[in-house]
Length: 348
Ligand SMILES: NC(=O)c1ccc[n+]([C@@H]2O[C@H](COP(=O)([O-])OP(=O)(O)OC[C@H]3O[C@@H](n4cnc5c(N)ncnc54)[C@H](O)[C@@H]3O)[C@@H](O)[C@H]2O)c1
Image 1 (cartoon, rainbow, N blue to C red):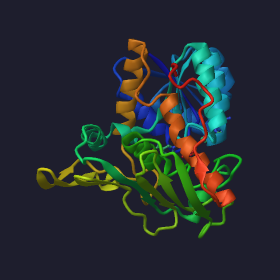
Image 2 (tube, rainbow, N blue to C red; image 1 turned 180 degrees about the vertical axis):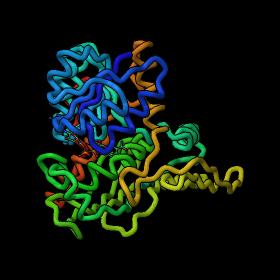
Image 3 (spheres, rainbow, N blue to C red; image 1 turned 120 degrees about the horizontal axis):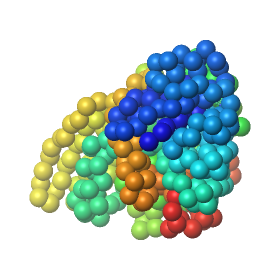
């Protein structure tokens, strides 16, 4: 299978490593406007360098295109790749807003290509075990679910790319960029809330988007949830999700790769551990294992004619919640999650 990568920045080497981890996969092309970077990357990881991504789409005959560019480019590049007949693996967040997500899903459906979103956290072994246990009702009736992304990003980080810290290009701040991983897991593990009441602030960076956010979540069955997110928590703490139920609780110390179980029926207190992979203090302190597992699932999905585990419909969920949080913070009132604009039972 022939792969191409568009956007050769900090996450691109992880994608190249993931492609190496897929049997039968070959990186045939990369696109970035910077010639030195493009040629150096191609020499190290393989493929031909293109300055213009549209030329890559027209000439490289890629089966799968990985989109690793700033958030405002995810939708237009996905539409162009789908039109060129390529399956699309798009970096998180899927896009800046729900309207863009819907356009991406519809374009890939129309073109008959698969759309996947790189939420590699769903492929970590402990995430899987937690999902199975929660779905089996191990905590009894779920009462509370929360996600904490208390990270640190320096001013230099925000200056490292002209798109960072801007509404136009990033589409938001800590919520849509860093916390989106924990928000995706929260939705996958505990479901989509019905209403959200939120406050956001820009506390400690010279940026126009939020570097701090709190959101109270209300679910249809009455349970509560909470999202805490900031890039101003020095030195950056491991990402953590908490689930409290009528028969006990589990704390997912995701950034420390540890599950902490306290169950009542039967009584059990134990921890499970896995290898650590955290981006709490520095963005690229992540391994390629999650991306590699996600790539293998995506390729298997193409072969089997099914949706991948994190398809466009799944990728859209966290964007819908973040959009509702921004609307609540802007208006000061509680916001109901927007209804879906596409047939979400369809293929994507
Ligand atoms: N899954 C993860 O854990 C993870 C981690 C980091 C970043 N990301 C995501 O990956 C994406 C890229 O982030 P990054 O940190 O690598 O950003 P970056 O700024 O380091 O790289 C972005 C690259 O896109 C290139 N680019 C911009 N416009 C282009 C165009 N028209 N054609 C071709 N290339 C173009 C830029 O030159 C740059 O090299 C974002 O969506 C980000 O949220 C995901």
